[in-house]
Structures are given as structure tokens and as C-alpha cells.
Length: 290
Image 1 (spheres, helix red, strand yellow):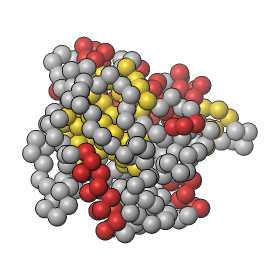
Image 2 (image 1 turned 90 degrees about the horizontal axis):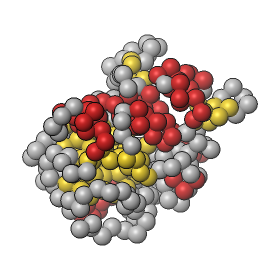
Image 3 (image 1 turned 120 degrees about the horizontal axis):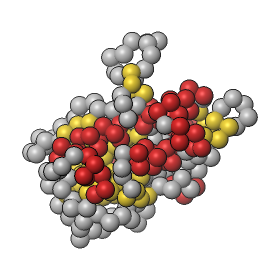
């Protein structure tokens, strides 16, 4: 049975089994002050740490299970979550995780989470609900052009074949019987809110990174007339998932209601508020097995 959540939170409309629960928060309902108002879940954006802790505690109480908050670095590493997570005695939260941009688990009662404020959160399970996973898909992670934390300034970015979504699917194939071809048709993916194609202006190097991998990515870029392009991040994610053999894709269809930039009362947006207000909070998507 689906738990009861605040009305403004987003409950995925997808055919996941009943024992798989998922939710995406919005900016409403927390205690943080402007410009992080109010349900900011990011502890790395300059917000009062006590406010972030209170917001996270509120969300985890609603989930009914502890959640792992990763240190996301716009890369392609996938974290396999422990069967018995160590909890922080004061907050009930799991201990800080390693740097990664995706996580997966077969454990029950432990939530994978992804924090976003323009990047795309992608949640995964399969028709049987044998596992759950979550990925942080900014353009670098999605294209497979990751910037490792240890990389020196000025060095060319590292490349990870297929990007973060492909790395997740590769790891998931080891959790089920059979290979990727046998399991891709059973994988279900939900795309959460992200910066929309009407707001995501990028340089030619971003387009080149995607088209070099798949020429079919070209239609997801629209010229602006000033040497820049508007990119459809959710559309590019759907394209990548389809290339991996995944056809059960739900959620973000690249329309305005899903755009973090265009819905300031509902979503945090780093691109919209980072310069204008000096900072932005983070909403988060969660998925777990009960």
C-alpha cells in the first residue's frame, strides 16, 4: 500500500509492484529560510545545517525508512547500498555515503535517494520489484562525460561509456538472472522534474558530446541563434534508456509542468536562483522496497 505523503509531493504514476514505494519531494513544507525555502534537503548549498537536518528528518519520517544521501559529483559511479545501513543516532539518517551519482539495493527498508535542482532524477525497479535504484542525470553524467573529483584543472574530462544510466543498468543486470538483454524489457524507469527544453541553454560542446555517441540525439537540440542550443535533458534520457533496451519509461515528458526553472513555487532551480538569489535548495527523489 502506498504511504500517505504531503499533497504537493510527486508520487510516480508507473506500474511498480506494491512493495516498491517512490516519491519526489518539492520545495514546500520545510523549515529553511530564503533562498532555500523551505524543504531544502541539500547540506552543501549554504543552508543552516540545523534546518537541513530538520527537513531530512521530516522527510524520512514520511518515508518510514532511512534514506542514503550521496555526495553527488556529476559522475557515473554507482553505489551498492549495504544490507544493514549504519544509522546516525541523533537524526535516524544513514551515515554519509561515498561520492557517487547513482545507487541501488536489494535490501528492504532502505531508500535510495537523488538530490536535484535542475538535473534529472531517474528511478528504477523491475516488474517483480526485486531491486530499486536511483540515478542523478545531469548532462555530464547522462552523456558519460564525467569530471572526477581528483581531476586536475584544465584537464580534459574523463569519459564513461554510456553514461550514468548505462552504468546503472550494467550493475542491475548482475542483480537478476540472465543478462542485460533478458532483463531490459522488465526494467521500469521514472523520470522526475528537471530543467526543461525551453530553459536549458548549452554550448556546442554539450551537443557534440551527445551526438558523438548517438546521432539520434541531434533533434533534442534546438538552435537559439546566438551559437547556443536549447537541450531537452529528459528527452535525451529517454533516448539513452531506449538505446539500452528499456521501453517502460514514465514521468517527465519534457513539458512545462516538469520544468524546475519554470515552476519557481514548486521546484528548486540552481540555474534560475543561483545567480539571482545566490543559492538554491535541493528537492529529492526516493525509492525503496517495503
